[in-house]
Each structure stands twice: as structure tokens, then as C-alpha cells.
Length: 205
Image (cartoon, rainbow, N blue to C red; front, side):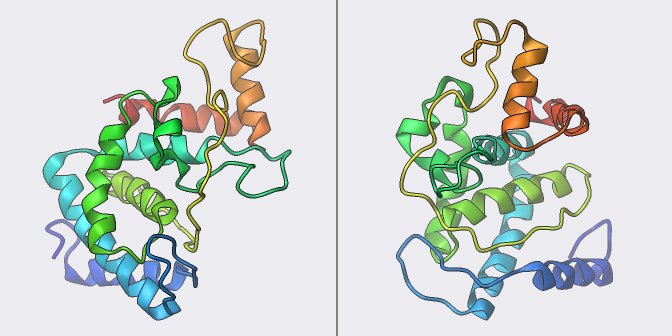
């Protein structure tokens, strides 16, 4: 039971999450699961994640992990998984060792026991579920999510995430141009840039 919201509100939150879930073909062991089985696994995982994140106080790294997995998306590429995005490829050594992902191996390590206990949940979904739950635990809103992501078997190319300092991989003349190039590539706007940049308040905590 949630000590702040009370049982009724917690039940309402879980009911809302259940309505958001979609059928999925899970990665991992490759076992076919029904929509209901996948939903139940996600609900169980979310409850465990809330307890774990609250105890370990790891909202920052899980939020950053979710963003860095998703932030490789390139709207100009139609083919999946070459287009990048929230596909779980950050779990692979090749991608987790990109300079922009420094330290995020710890976030993957935190999630490994959850994937082991609930292997029907794809890594792609698990990472985004953890990020959304991290926001809630940190006092943020319940994030509407759709599930059913399949974990990619190949990594996005290095350089899709923003560089911390010059020289910038895209050849931008300054940081403002570079950030816009990166976010516009994902189909995001200047308003999105401002909103998402604010996440560093948590992500670097």
C-alpha cells in the first residue's frame, strides 16, 4: 500500500496502467505470451520497481538510462532497428560503452534481476517502465505509456546523443546548433528541448 496516496488511489493508478498496456511480442527467451500475461508481468514489475527505486534512491540513473536508450532515434531512417530509439539496445556493450553513456552500466545492472525474474518483459519495455516509474517515485506525474516494444539485436551508431562539449560530432559551430540538430533529428521541437533539458535536475543528481 502507498503510504501517501492510500489504497484506493494506488488501485486507480494500477487500473490506469493496465488500460494503457498493449499486446507485445517479448524478447528474451522468445516465449509467446498473451496480452493478459504480459500485462500482469508489467504490473508486477512496476510494483517491484517502485519499492526498489524508493529503497535504493536510484531514480536519477534509471531516468537517464531510459532517455539515453530512446535518444538515439533518427526520424529520417525508416528501417527498424536502424532508426534507433527506445529499443533496449543500450544493454549491449557496444552501446553502453559510448562516451555519452558513461556510468549507465550501473542502471542496466540494477534492472538485470527484474529481467531475470520476469523474462517475458522485453528489455526495451523494462527500461522505459523503469524510467517512468523513477519519475513517479521522484514525485513526478504518472506517465502514460504504451508497451509492446521489441528489443533490438543491434546497436545505434555512436554519436546520436548530444556531445558534452566541442568539437561536436555533427560539425555544429556551437552548442545551441548542436543540441537543435540532435533533437530535430528525433522530430522534437525547441519547446521539447527546454522541457527535456530540465530532466538533468534529476538525471545528474
